[in-house]
Image (tube, one colour):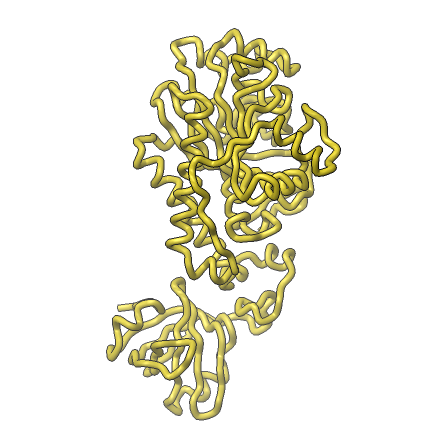
Length: 424
């Protein structure tokens, strides 16, 4: 029966079967070594027998092999245990000239990493990033399932804009015109006003023609929506799951964080609340040219991170900067109950308390220069007993980028889609 590289210790003194890739070869003469890589790490294979002499000469990096042999303690500093080979079979050969070095001995630029994605996944860096991303998703789902939330699967093909304003990817849908969803907004609200508590992990699509290291045209969102909740109650769930994710990544991905040279500090709760007006004032004091009613640039978000700390909530935004469905504040209707989570100088989450009153919703849609008739199905959802509700979304790739200490979001996206990249 096959075992994996991380199971050698428990199989000391036994004959085992390993399968994987030739990660490296060390040819010393009479004693040669193969470093075999599988999904759980690396194993050192010792070749003592003369019968392997010709086989070793024929091997290349990334050849797929299986090894039968005895597990024993190793004298190597890098490997506590090794396998003395009795039999080696070649399952499939690799081309000898690799376009990307999975050993990371030769450094690779970003474009090559993206062009040869499957080879990049074989590097320690690539494996570390996407194991961390898996832990983020697992933690998010676990947190809300434990709180009795229902997981939704909203459609990604829609008949009209979810939020208005943003450019949409248009597609032909039989005899009709349709679009790729820019947000699951309507559907998660419909879920909340029926199930009360819902969450989802979904792809969304934005057709803006940007070329920024923090943006993609296809992203994954981790969303929730809660009925009988205001903005502050939604923020409590946001900061709760945020800290839960960080703790789990720090605890369960120690080796991956070490590979990426990252240390995670866990912020204490509640996170600091910073009002939009306060953030504008702080930036002006730092010499930034910005006025009330303007959005923050990515450079200004970084500066806010230096002023207010690694993680904080930015709330009470001007209505013109947020979507039409954001609920106005009772004490100042020019402000809305909207909030962002800024982490390591980047907005990684955004949310609002939603308008659940049809007449007010129609007014706000008109104020945004949109036609309420285009949002008929959306507005009608709140005509039959819709409670107050609030929600938010976390950008999976943005959060991964910040946890992993990367500067370009494409590095932490398995198969990024941008204005210039639609392959592999």
